[in-house]
Image 1 (cartoon, rainbow, N blue to C red):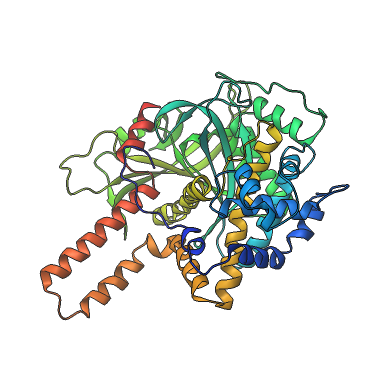
Image 2 (image 1 turned 135 degrees about the vertical axis):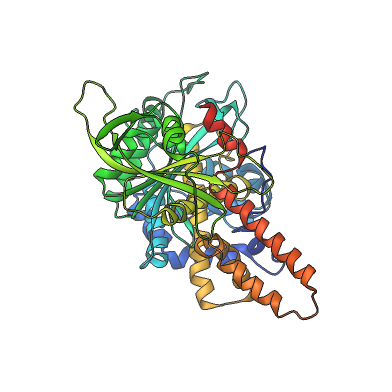
Length: 492
């Protein structure tokens, strides 16, 4: 998604549920909290307090406030806190600012509960992406300058790298990390109480690690924690050799978008070996050789090549066989495609079919939906605290809220407790990419239209054309095939 592309309406996981007149969100939230066994997971993550309001009660309040139509923890404390607890505002901020709490482990345990319910016998894929939260202010610590892909400019703020698991029904966030760049960094202007604490160590890593290093650590932690997947999906900003090496080491099939840069691929033709970049491969072996894909508005051309995954010229070469898939859209409005209007995908499974590559990669769209929900509905980095520990708490609290919503959908949708829950379930089903993106629902609508005898042939044709265009637009957005994104990749 970007400013140059018309943004399509996205399914909201929260709006229909939370805007119901007769819904007491605190009752629904409390029921979900108990069913998922959140207090048990708090103990497993070593959350504890020596005195005062129990840690479970304060965590409950910190997760609940975003759905009570208030803009901050402070406003919640002033206007609604007494309705739920005798705890004071200071107790909420004290927990947010604690340096020893392992919010990452708590989110991973919660995500595992959701995955256990939802992912039986389903194809799962690790999905990685980042998003930028603009945060201004000369006294705001822990921020730096980042390139925002949505606006194509540099902004001051925080960049959050998120890892999740996607299947054809939903996306489940399992880990987050803050990345601080070296540009215009505003360092933390206070001392951590304990330099060996979780928050202090994560702050140092956020400055020292590269994003590929963060991704490799996040995948390794997820697998050690018992979360597994079949595929690894990422856009071109994460398609690096270290990350591809990591996927092979963990037996993951990588499907990633590649940049059109100077990375060389080894191609053998008629016994002769050539080292060619993406642009050269396109000109010599793809241009004029496009093939039409079934059920999708794209043409493609695949080439099996070898890629040296060694980053250093001094290290021994590590050649692996990969499949490159060149894709361009079919547009009736264009007589001739631009030289930039094609995208490049890579998979480490050279036997994977072209349609399957795009079908699985489409699951990456779930993380875009999550980022939209996180920023608009789930309190993403809205806690008003300057402490780095609160930043960490906020990004994981956002993921925890999303996981609880997914769990509520699974539990209450299956029990069919009320019409409200059914509406909630219908919105979540909008993430069923396998049917939406591959034409099934178009056929169903077309069949319904054919039964409407009062419609003329012209009216039916116009409606089907509109449906088709909507699907094409949505698919273009999901696959990042819009002209803005393609031009940005060309510039890179």
